[in-house]
Amino acid sequence: MSYFIGQEEIEAASNILAKGDLDRYIHGKKSLTYQFEKKFSQTIKTEYSLAVSSGTAALICGLAAMEIGSGDEVIIPGFTYIATALAVLAVGAIPVIAEIDESLTISPADIKEKISSRTKAIIPVHMHGLPCAMNDINSIAKSHNLWVLEDVAQACGGSYHGKMLGSIGHGGAFSFNHYKILTCGEGGALSCNDSELWQKAHIQHHGGCMFEPRSLEIGVNKFAGWNFRMSEISSAIMLAQLNRLDTILASLRAEKKLLHNQIKISANRGTLNPTHDELGDCGTHMHILMNSENDANKLLVEAKQHGIGNIWLAHTLGHVYSDWEPILNQTGAHHEGRNPFNLASENIKDSNRSLEKTSSILKRTIVIPTKFNRPIAELEALINKLNCVL
Ligand SMILES: *Cc1c(COP(=O)(O)O)cnc(C)c1O
Image (tube, rainbow, N blue to C red; front, top):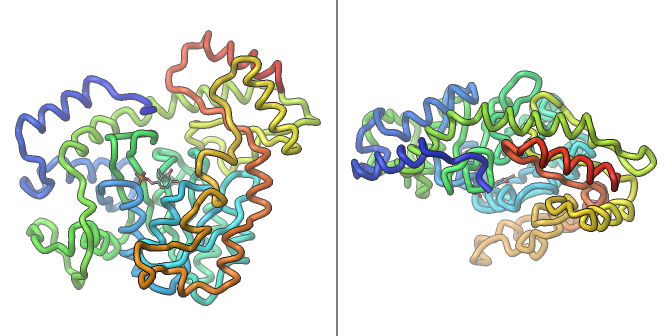
């Protein structure tokens, strides 16, 4: 479900294919990947950005640049795509899962509970385009000397009290896979304001910078990285996609606003989930917090009976900690000797398996995705059907 791919993307991809120069380093700063990085930094309002091959790669490069590794703990929320946890494991660190609150984002109070002497970073995830409580998270991080890596995979273009998501922590990791707000099929980017962080992320994504182009000017010590480079084809598509960001967000936000205004939830059944910034919300999904699991399940059945197809419980589709098999089983790597869970204390292993508050909230939260440029008649029909069951 990409939101908006058109002629511009098709032309941009065929132009670069016709040229045949598909590597980002061939034309130095004239390459499409450099141009995309520059434009992306302007959009997110950070000094630097690094184009990579996926959102997972962006998280890994961010964590590696923060020098997070073996035995370190990284706090993540129990409601996110599993990639957030996998990236922590990939650098050898232990994911410590914190509760979310009714805003569907990580609970600052539970972050405090989960901090130990081994905690090195927090990854707040702006799930479903919803901004996290960044002021609280940053102040907790500051007082404990922790890194903050925002997971912006689902919230490209969103903001929090006027600041772009991905520019508020020390770094921001974006995904451009098929299901995200902007897409080139598979891709990602890391945003940051710190030149040293950017250089280390660059080394991590370019195999240790063996063939370091002069234009890079890497001044920090090299280390063994991987290959997470973005191809010029993807960058060509992303340059075209970036031009559509405002249009896509305006459409989704307008639809969400209309849904909020016209939907009438019976007070004894549920309410809208609270938000940390209504204006900064990307508007990709609307949420209703039901009073009980029973009410939520009943609503879903009734919605299906009324022909509402695209509606689900937040506690589904693999975005919940209780679905993350390699985390629950503690198979943290392909080889036992590289399994970060070997270094984890028993209480982390146990608490990673049971987050009661998160489960309860997600089992009561109804998700209704918005749709880009949905015809008004279709939207009105949806609102009418929803009002029959709410
Ligand atoms: C999609 C997603 C990722 C991973 O992105 P990929 O490009 O699929 O690697 C990470 N975190 C969240 C919250 C996501 O939704």
